[in-house]
Amino acid sequence: MSIMVPSTTPALITPGRQALDSALHQLAQAAEHLGLDDGLRTMLATPRRSLTVSVPVRREDGRLDVVQGYRVQHNVSRGPAKGGLRFHPSTDIHEVTALAMWMTWKCALVGIPYGGAKGGVAVDPAGLTTRELERLTRRYVNEILPLIGPEKDIPAPDVGTDEQTMAWVMDTYSVNAGYSVPGVVTGKPMTLGGSLGRAGATSRGVQIAALAALGGSPEGVTVAVQGFGKVGALAAQYLSDAGCKVVAVSDVTGAVYAGSGLDIARLRAWVAEEGGVHGYRHADALARDDLFELDVDVLVPAALEGAITEANAPRIRARLIVEGANGPTTPQADEILAASGTTVVPDILANAGGVIVSYLEWVQNMQAYSWSSGEVELKLRDLMQGAYSEVKSLAAERGLTLRQAAHVIGVGRVADAHQMRGLYP
Ligand code: NAD
Image 1 (spheres, rainbow, N blue to C red):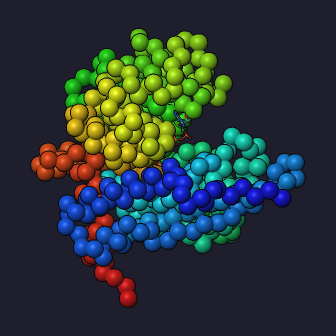
Image 2: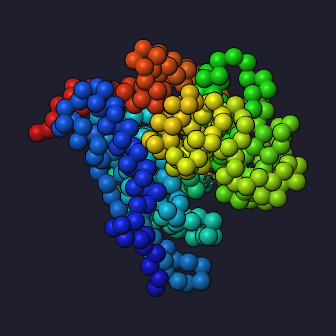
Image 3: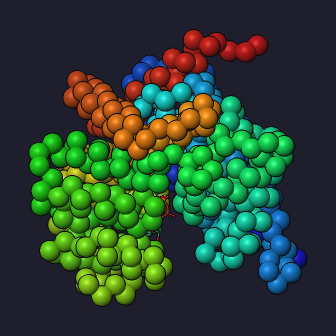
């Protein structure tokens, strides 16, 4: 039997630990601005529940692997916990905690009645067969079963998971309950109670945020997108559909560039066949991380945390960054970008389209009813544009960056909810 346990070397600062440090830094700034007392700051800086589980997986060749899984509920003052499920080899408890915390502020910022959660399994899904992935997902869900439920904590897709994963989550939970419970998870296939518009919702939200921040016509605005997965590929598509010229995209396999603009539909078809942008013949190859330094108007990081750091921030030429990913910019990079006049539409605002339509999916499930794609799109647009305007006004009024303003609003609402409820016992 082999045991796959993540390194716990104390001296090692993992990407997850860096993400948590960033999240705590952003919280501390907002708490200072809001004048929150020390006790409340500590409440908001610590998750209400964290569960670490060992997930045994039977491999096709009969071996048994054991991987680490996590579910963190950061805060439930405003409603049930809500947050994605990530399958990635470097996921750890710190990363999952940071992602759960950002979910709390995001839900509060866009005004949906959820707290924040996140789940993760430290595994590379590309290294598993479909049957292995199914066994892994079902066992992980079984291990975290006491925490989740439509009124308690509702998972959704994130890096390395998709509609199929969500279908297995729904089935495993339902088999244990003894009846079908579609509301336990969002981002499901349509046949299992998924919502129209959910698959592209995060990317649609990125498009709405980018167009709002651009203000004028998007025609000919040049864009580079880091990450060409669920969020990045459709963000590139929607921005291109709106008239922007998407000149470069990257994924884990490489990057491609075309000064006259990439044909995103064609590139998506290539990636669906080949598994990555590497080798795409209708554009020039680019070193993966050179994408950040291109002379473009808009940069959309849509991969993982910590993509924009103090090392590459000084060389970024885009005047607008719209964060499709969670936590792509470190606090040090944020300061450099603010000083150089670069506008950053922060993750908790720019990528909130996903959780907004997850919420709409859950509402439809709870009512056993379904809305048209037009109704879903309208509600998404309303909530995104409303949140953008609030953040923009507060930033202008108080001389804050958009990230600081978004955190002041999100953290402030959670603090208010906590104080109104009072402390039990
Ligand atoms: P995904 O697994 O579908 O795609 C991730 C993409 O990033 C892949 O194309 C991968 O190749 C690429 N990538 C990884 N490392 C890279 C690197 N070093 N350089 C360039 N590309 C790299 O994941 P996703 O669901 O698209 O999520 C992407 C980001 O968006 C994450 O930060 C996630 O938390 C955030 N997010 C996702 C959703 C959602 O609904 N899926 C919602 C809100 C936020």
